[in-house]
Length: 346
Image (cartoon, rainbow, N blue to C red; front, side):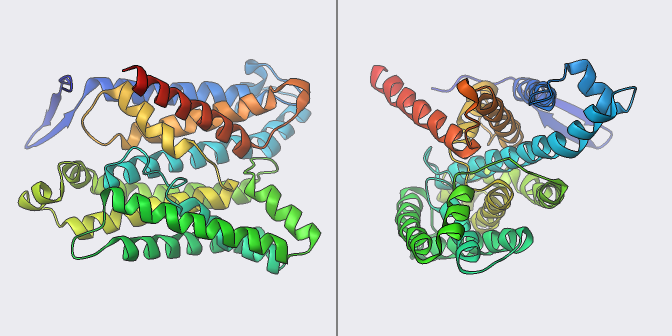
């Protein structure tokens, strides 16, 4: 039985706004933690900077030219890319888990991340495409994968639940094999470049990566928030949501397309990143203890997890500088083992 969550109502004239203090406090704490991790990352590297020097560089209040150049041109784009990629994956994971009503319903598990990667790999291996075309291919192939999964998982009733997850896993496995074939077909240099991209990385991120990711995220979030109440009702079940006046197929399609777009944008900006979309919504639910889908909290948690993983990769022993996708994959494996052990113990 779920514990009750305190709810408050803010009234302003004829309008009223319902909010829950605990999820709001958890979200604000995660935002503060995101800022703190960002400052630490801006000071981490070959040229170590204290938090005060980082703030001076950001505010242009007396920092050295070298520090300003490193912070503003090299490290800040990397940090902002991590923030938007982590937030996009966290929100996408919350949507997928809610739509499928399954804790494993994250884009990296049900094949959407693999589908987004397929288009990018095809351009890297078979052609000499630039970053913009690679990003566009990732978005389009992610959308195409979602369309295939939805078509195969729908029958007389709307798609959802375990059927969506199982079909997504099957399509993802097929695309993973296709990606391997593409790597074998390409020449050695392009295959190595594609393999490096597949590992997921925040290295060499520039403002050309930040601007599309930020613009796309800001454009999609309002659509998600407008459907937040309807997606909360979807968790009651399709029949109950329909009786409450929700157009279930249309709502599910809109939310899945938004989640796929967020996943494809994140994949285009940093490559396939595992674990974030799976864990961020679940941790956010535990922090907020709210029956609602934790869209904002999951986005903030996704940013925190990716920044923390990036910091861990740079603080790794003997200066390995592990790809961020490998670090999140290792963390995801430990997290899944912990969940299995916890469920078995319970």
